[in-house]
Picture 1 (cartoon, helix red, strand yellow):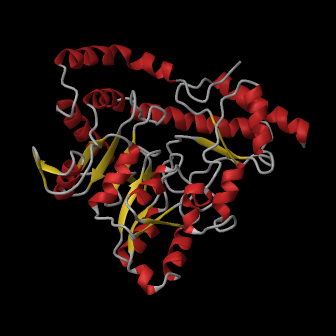
Picture 2 (spheres, helix red, strand yellow):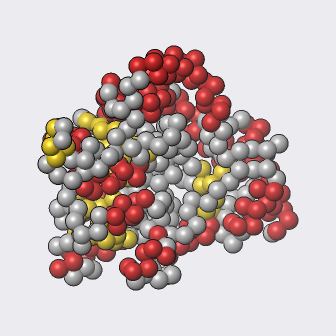
Picture 3 (cartoon, helix red, strand yellow):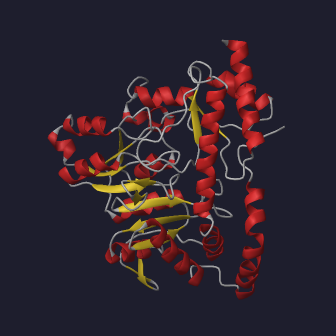
Length: 380
């Protein structure tokens, strides 16, 4: 039995009858740029996330970029984030000429370590501390970063908070949903996300009407009105087609999240029954409700061989992420070396994502764990 890492055809089967007539109506309208589908989806997302406003944009990457632009990020500013995340988090910082200031992760959650965050700021020279602009905590794999102490640190040093919630729609911390705890929250609707479109798409949550209006201007080249530009923005619009698809899917999201969480619980039971606890580290829920965009295990000293074994037996797996950002060639100018962020480097060498999509069947999960058990019977 082969088990894919993700099978979106099963999800499409659920929504086809509801989606098809809406897509047909949109095609017949021939109105594809912004418009009512985008306005409707923005209102639905603001309500879902528990924020006053939301602005649809062209991708999760552009959500980060436009948020940094909205807070006035300039060349030479320092923006704090994690080195263990998708490239876009730090890439958006660098694209504006700002400098990513990395802080290592907490090993249980893979999210930025608040104690290390405080120490990093304390160790800065006064002149560098004045250049601090923002913190981008990453809610990784579906679990929120430890936002309580992060928020306190941001307030102390008058820093903006831009939540990277690309993998965490619906995740909760202290009763608040991802994207509602910072100045801005950034979401991705890449097809593999818990809420995924039929292509690229993103969204920024905002706390005030003025912030919303600023984002709306920035996403159309900074135009306050047609052909009159008050600042330089970009083409960051969310397509009406993507908004329509996402609006239909949003009605199913809590159901799909519950299925992901059920699958995570089943995995824990299967791993325990197979006696794999001494070989494999499982994800834990520390900072509130985990929505399991990924089910990421640790396999110290065995990760790469285990990945090959699973792939050879038809199990879809992936590594998120094999190279931490401070070791990426394009960031060599930052002057950081192997060993500078040991927890991120350790995670990059040990982690492996298993199938966790909502429609995953119990027999498929049993197959995944059986193949993992067969590997460790041979190699321990």
